[in-house]
Structures are given as C-alpha cells and as structure tokens.
View (cartoon, rainbow, N blue to C red):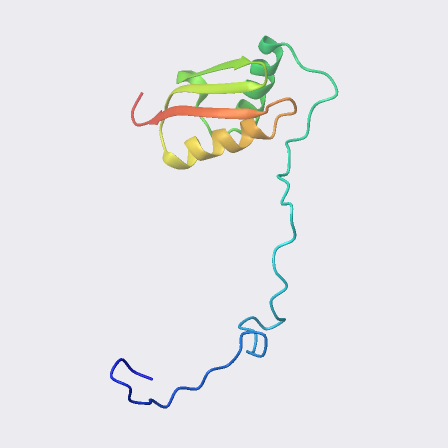
Length: 115
C-alpha cells in the first residue's frame, strides 16, 4: 500500500525463500576470523646481522643500485632509507627485504629520483 491507501503490485519474497545471489549459495563468514601471523624465526638475529642479511638479499638480486640505500634493523623491524632510481625498485626492495628470515616488518622510506 502507498501512503494514500492505494494498493500497488508488490511481490514480497521472504528472505529464507529468496534465491542466493552467489552461484554456490551464501554460507556466511566463519567466526572468529584469525589473522595469519608472520612466521617467527627459531632464533632472533642480532640487529646488525639482520641488516646485513637484508643488504645481501637486495644486492644479490642485482636490480637495485644500493649505493644510496641505508638499512637499519631493530628487533625485526627493518627500515630502508635513501634514494633509488625507479619506483619498481622501491617496491622490489621492500618485497625482497620482507622475505629475509627474521624480518617482521619493513618500513620503506626510500625516495625515487636521481641520487
């Protein structure tokens, strides 16, 4: 019915009888949702060894000029600072650093441009 009492042609379907909007139906979200935690190393590397391992990984890849990049590590948090030539190298540096065993977080503060 409308506000002034007129009836409209309205077809109402109870929600439990409505067809699912997803091909396999709707199954809801399982609770609780638990985040995937980063893999913890068997032993924590000292900060200087972790920074050295990250530098080796970045230099070993060969696609990043490391001459203007500083790497610092503190309790598994690695900070990349300096300047590199291209944006893809900035993204690549972060991805390579994240893959080093013992790295929990990468702070990418690299700038892109001429050194």
